[in-house]
Length: 187
Image (cartoon, rainbow, N blue to C red):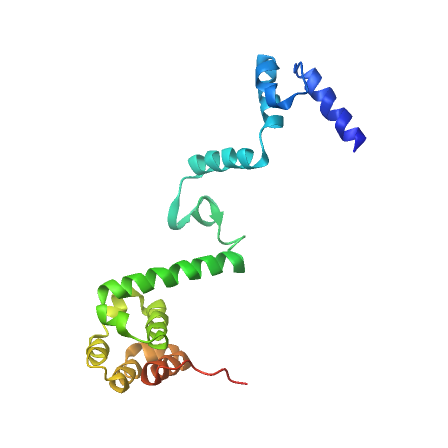
């Protein structure tokens, strides 16, 4: 620790700082030493913010995956092929998508707001698979929901092309629509 303090003091003096009062470093450092003195007086948060600002400007933002020189990236240059996303990052994306679909469904299909949570969640799960356009194509399901005929709405899910593509998930969502209850864990 003492060695680190000596190295720090020596570098400050060599850089032209005439004081160790870091709160006044910008006023007392020579013009050539300002970057060194500023680094010492700035907090890690400010330094990180400067780096973020620079990388955002250099990388540019892309909301959808794009081909980079050697990989596929997203956002501000996130290498999807080598780094991908962590579970924590994926959970943030999941939560954002849930909120997005919940808001969009409430606007596009006002009857959605009157449904129990299990039924809303069945529709959100269905929307994850088919998208907002796709969920809008479930006309007969929406008509049954409007009539509060949840047995028929469940049947419309089962009879959809979607059901043949996802198997057990479809059965679970159909049961949630029919019973207004979450599926129980198996095993």
